[in-house]
Length: 396
Image (cartoon, rainbow, N blue to C red; front, side, top):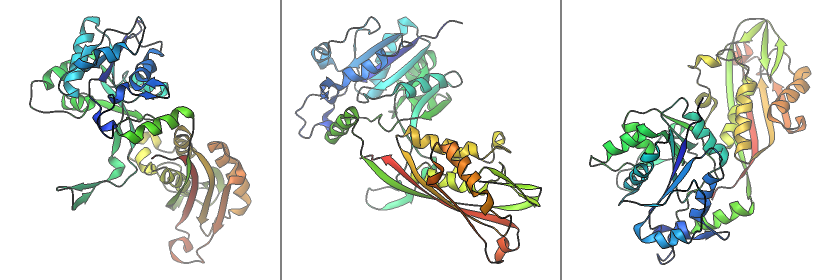
């Protein structure tokens, strides 16, 4: 099978005035970070990937000398082209420059994002096997308010459905070129290329972004970029909590903490209904601001029917590791009248520790009863409560 050709457009036609406190400095894409201009770093991030077949920079008409001074040399680097009056227009100029080369796929990258990791770029490319478009994104962790006048809050958005877009955004070349051409004929400015693809009816997937894939916009962003390159990481401790309950149904065992415990009933749920692991998963997700277990593994999705809850827990742990964090300790309390838990605690600690790659000594598993009160006392179900302490890189 022929290997797909992959072109890259680096959008660098802006003046970058917000990145200078007084507006007098060089445009941000030509300012150095750790001795190398931002734009040079951005372009090299793609030239370092052997599967990239061509790269074209879209620059401001007045910046030809600045671009030439970068001294970039690679046979895959095409001559720069001049951008338009908006980012949207500049991308279209880049697409036009690539049209004679007829690439299969195109990645569109902001010049001011010099730290796009190879993993993220590769994930975007891989997603294009199934989707017409793809972009990296991160779940929004701040509470988002909507205001009509910038003073009074009109409503609070559901952040579980909100994601911050990054670049590169990837597309099948012919489809995004056609969509951009159509978009250029209407009076509307789109915020990014994925929005144009959505407007054109193309399916756009999201892949996991990276917190270091920052867009340099303001003066303080240069200081953060220097810290990223120096490897200096300022860690902060975050705490998350989780809560889950399931009712009993006829059966012969329950799954708790990843351990099968014989019992005269089982817990009812879409997966294996492991309340302990569900609560722990939510606690970890909460600590890193990644929503809850239902967002990542919807009960309406039949692929999770009957699945072991260690799958959910490992996913949460992988998100921590990918963000450069580490789990410090976990604490889960199981509330039930039966079965007895104490004898199974070491096995639970072992399963949880192995799933997350942490020492069992960092995991506390406790059990108590409800003193025969309520639905737990009537042995109709059980509850688990959990907390997670996680160290994560501080995001300024």
